[in-house]
Length: 468
Ligand SMILES: Nc1ncnc2c1ncn2[C@@H]1O[C@H](COP(=O)(O)OP(=O)(O)O)[C@@H](O)[C@H]1O
Ligand SMILES: [Mg+2]
Image: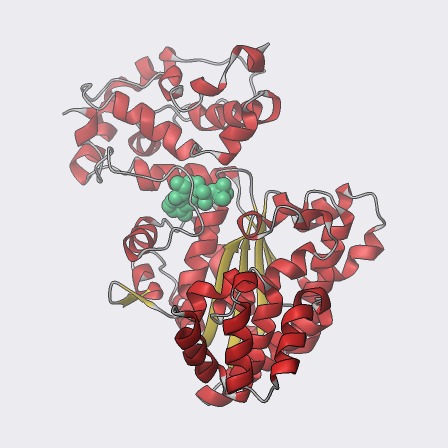
């Protein structure tokens, strides 16, 4: 049997090394749901998360934050996307997201909580904060609330990049005159409002014309609004939180049931760094959303570190940030053991015949295998196979390779000149293993893959400058 024939799923299938927010056509989503592995640790995380959400939906709460932490490649983005699919309640290829979990989660109570969460009416806003913020906005202390306002506007179909336009669109929509405005605008400008609104400064006549014709506004008032709207626009957190509450109330009224808004933000931790202003801005946003919306608006964010370690690194007193800790009451951390389990299940899972064969092989050759690689006692965590079962799970790799490859990635990221590209690029532990397994696909079973076979993904990053 060749190595490639041992695996339950085709080892050469296309696997995204890292999961990206914004790739959201149905084929990608269905693939992400299909291939998702629920490890022991993730099982606990789903349990905790959906329990908090359920509690939040039955009683008023201000503990509306969920913080997901884990090192690069630990599965934060994939997890966040999965949560967004579950909470959206939408169907993907004819099946609600929870339907993909029937055979992934054994505990019926967790499944019931997940199902209940999907049945709740909610708008799910998933975004990568770095991609959504303007390049200059990080210097401003309003950075976070600006981005929240932008994505909240976009979700409702309003203009995100020019928030003062979003504001007037909201007003027109509330007064029921938005459609009339759009129609009139299209007539005057020769193209739809959505296509033209970002050309705000070139569409003066059509905008003023449509405003004065369809809104309770004189031509002068429309012109004066047009001239001053950008300069007059200011965003503050209290207003933002109020807008979210008003929106939720409006939807609840229209739908005749409770409605929720959930912000899911990838890479919040990296975006904040240890900038106190940004952290304070986030704190005030979650605090205001908590008090204003009472549990109807949620914030679920990811970062490489736990929220309390981020706060410890800032040089401010912890008391200044006590509220953020309180609001992000649900904290889930993804460990390295978790990724190793994912790799074993997603990539290295064997067919039944192959697993039997490998167990027998181990029984037969365990003495030789043990002699092939030995580590001195002072080498930390260089694991070998525990037993035949472990061999069948990990083959054609050797257990120590998981930890070692992870250390290589971390080392390059920290010390390499091009390390940053590795962290932003397509590479992860999972694809290091996939590349190596593909390379040895034609070998007969019994061969072990040497560690250096995992080099292709990281070798390009070892430039002379980065190793010197
Ligand atoms: N539970 C899981 N099931 C299947 N694949 C996973 C799981 N967790 C992570 N992965 C995969 O591992 C790789 C890295 O995950 P990603 O979410 O991009 O990590 P992070 O955002 O923490 O850097 C991706 O290919 C992703 O699909
Ligand atoms: Mg990510």
